[in-house]
Image 1 (cartoon, rainbow, N blue to C red):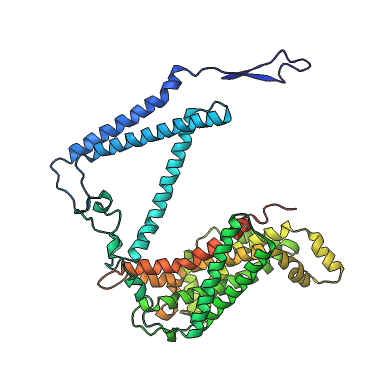
Image 2 (tube, rainbow, N blue to C red):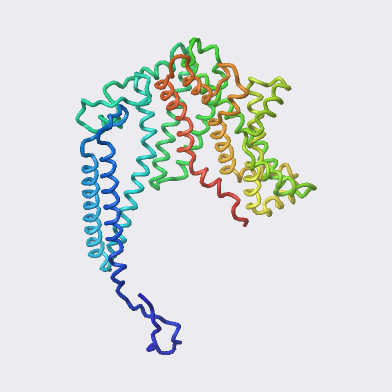
Length: 463
């Protein structure tokens, strides 16, 4: 295909206007897709032939389920799937042409179908491990995998891809709450927190439908305040004395409390340190400002575990090993650079005229920061807190080095203890604990994912 100039247009140059002239593709270009398809089918056939030949006389493995003439069935499945794709693409092409009145390429429709199929397969592959861990959490047989059930006629059960649902129970979850004494007032606060999370989930669904209003935003704000206060009281006043069990499983809820406590305090410290430092770098001019920015960028190039020996030696020297204080200080030190850079970029996107007007009215630089900048920075403050909270909640290496007592363990260390049994690995309890431990992060991310998207681009444009 090409375009040639239209020389009949009056008052225009020859090159100002072009007319599309269609040219039929060459024979080789038309036949190329079919040649590629034939080559793929031939390659699959040759591979299946040699694989089938190599299996002749070989002893069957217990871990591999052998299907007689399975490659033939697989080829037939591929042909059937290809036929369905070809048919649906043809139907889509005809329907689209009938609705729009335009010519639609069959290859384009087929390409869209293949793209959707590929994306669906990618999603299934990504979700399958999560599904299997969830099923293992309800499996009392203490196993992360299901043995093949050769008596079942369904090939998915024969190969162990799907577990046996009839053996599922809550036994693994019950072990995590054994010998836990929870007062009535803590149960009431837990119920309030659950109701608040449910309400936030419903509001998130309503907001996605486009029916968000000012009243809904105010209600969400009050629910968030109630949830924050309830969780803070629960985390602060829940102690090791409430967990009297002798096993690590009975102290899992304590590890969740420890993780929430450390992550929450670290998030608050990250806001205090990064906002003040970021504002000073963005608005003040002082010697070493540029060098400080370069240093913040430079230290981000090195992973945290390079400083493990130095951090551990420092905490032992200060007497802060196996304490939440030492772990929080270590986390807070690593949070300054990135969060300061993020807040600096956000402050630079705010107009300086707002601060200048406040200072003309007699406000000091600190009052300007507190009463002008911070009220305009609600979204970025939530982003900094959640970013640090989630990163601290999922951290394992530093906590494993500094915390040695079971009553101080975080969720990551507790999960590790379930896989280091002397005689057996507690896979079922591990899966149940991993499922429950992930719920706070899932709830936070789903409820505040808008702040993650907005926070990562804040400060990207100066106004």
